[in-house]
Image (cartoon, rainbow, N blue to C red; front, side, top):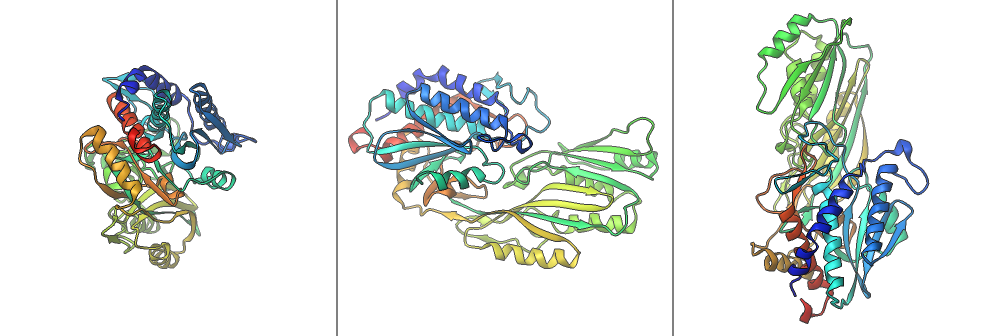
Length: 467
């Protein structure tokens, strides 16, 4: 049973809800965490707002100690839809205010529009369409609202210990048609202290999250001729979209240079241009000491070489999920120490040790310490499973597009379920704007996604006569 008419009738309500939710700056802020608000006031506000909306729409809702929440309807076995309300920091380069939810040319702009507030609310209104149509369900449908997906999944760790775990479900947090395999995710922190202070490199700082390609890097230099720095910068050839600007404060001997790159999701480093790496390549042209040059050379030779782990000799790949990817997501250098964080996505037929051991051998020889900050195992649901077939049928019936399942490097909440897949919202051929400046979701695609999710729920949770 197609619910297109009901969903078209809710168009303005869907748009308004997405705008209201985007306008809540739900970036993790543990410095202001409190009981019932473990990830800060912004995320708490987004969770409270969404649960209030769910209750207003007539569903059962529950707040699980501020770590997560859910909105539920129906009875029987549990179908889970796992979205999240937290967002990565907005970054720079926006043409509109990042939390304005401005509508331009039929698109809703704002941090979280596509990742993941827009599609999460599309799933909620899909449930609303089914409820309003009085279609009986043979399963409970539970929209789970995560709050720490972008950082470490402490929300899911807590929620799944406290609440019933759905056996099957989907995460509206990736791409259509359907993602049946997700690579393992490994975040590594590498640190090293210097025996003596560096004479010229005062600081190099770039990146805020491991899973984002840094679009900004700031370098502070001292003890070098300012005209030489300016002349070298003018002659340095940057690729399109990358540049640098000297921002030297008055009455100081230090020189500050701001490098601008292009952000992208950390699972697709080849889609961005890492501002840190271009800053280091420029610095190699300056008359630094041999120790300083050695640091630059190490970074560019190992984590900075290629996008697929070539520098560390871990360019692994397999048939189900493709190539490993490596993103230098955070870089912090001062005159006495260096710290950087890597985001690595490894293929589903490999294990953590296949990645970790080659890196450990190289970096320990160079005097670095290494710590695993976060690890998610790879995840795989067979293409011929009933879940995959039901969702792909919904996608094909509603959109008329070719249905197929594929693998990604991104990690979604689908991994939290025994039978979980990622399902939308990005349609084939659309640009990658997740974690980028000017993130948006088009209104037409919001409505189409809502229709696909409504049909998907019916295919899984209703009798055949209502599908």
